[in-house]
Figure (spheres, rainbow, N blue to C red):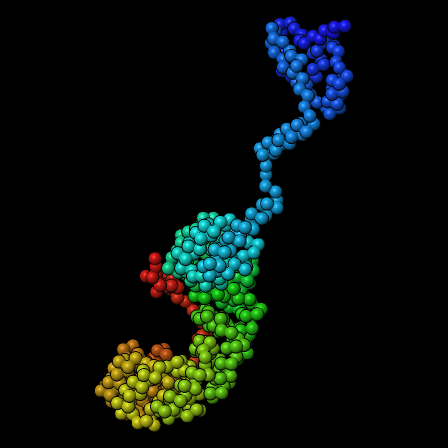
Length: 523
């Protein structure tokens, strides 16, 4: 029997949509051999797909489009499609990213080690991803004057971006008036400034300094002198140190000048540094208000280490025969004596004066009490003063007495001393012994004091000592001119010693800037 198989089916003219459906949906039933059934059954079990090409009317749908593929062929094609899809959406894994970052950092570290920078402290710090960018940072720091050694002292500076960190900070400092010539030293002392935010960190500190009455022109000098101040918190050490100084008597209007001359005060802890220093000076006999005036006059004294410098120097003064009761006067006259390498200076100066004028150790103590600055006198000028006095006719013994009585003779302007001595010899016509008894004659102004008073004395016909004539105020001298006789006690009075009360008077200065002398040295 002949079995007819329809190989194709003609469809009406209408638009068909391309799709993939089982070929059985379009083929009429047909007899299929057993072997073919087996193949079909096997194919359906493996979810094979029969492709049918659909087209517009007038075309045929071929049942021969059935494509039986082996499972192996399908698996290969599926694998290729998966790889193709994966290539379009591939992202590096976290491990791959980590390994890449480690490789980049290793290359940066290798570059740094090659130029002598030790990168050990940079672990965990965000760094450029390439050695080229790191080279730009290093080159920029070199342009600022920083050396490899400077960078090794603070390698974290390499974490600062040139554009985002360094340039904005340096531009801000420049606009404030900080001189470019000081940038190198500025950054050596406080490289952390390059990490700072201008708005959040720097500007508030500058505003605080202005609020402390530091003149705008002095702000850049303060920053140059103490760049570390830019890292302080406003509510911390800065405010407490200023409050304490005002509390002990430093005038509020003087605070600006004090901080301008010695801004390091802003970084000093009250309980550990300032208060112990003030209390120690009080224990030596200096009233607290006088201490406040000393700080106003020379705030640097707060920087002298109390235990390692101040107390040892006080002991040295006592060892060189300065009396305990005179310590307060010595320090008040010359506060800088507390910060010197004093024992060596005392030893040197005592030996020199002993060889020059045969001054004993006891007399040397009196010299220091009356003029503490004697410990800092240079030998050559001192010899010139002694030679001048010898040329005036004084003996060595007289010179010794004069210097012990008035050590200022060794430090006065020789030209002025000559003018005073010439007037003494030619106009006053007094014996040299009067000068031996009152060597402080040379410390008075010839034009404003000596000449006017001498004329009044001569006109009145009085005979008096130089001390009676000079060692008093103008008001007191005017009263004396009404005396009918001269009180012997007044004639024998000696020049007054240092008056601590005079120190406690409020001080004032009219300078527009604490750094006027530096104004010419600007960039």
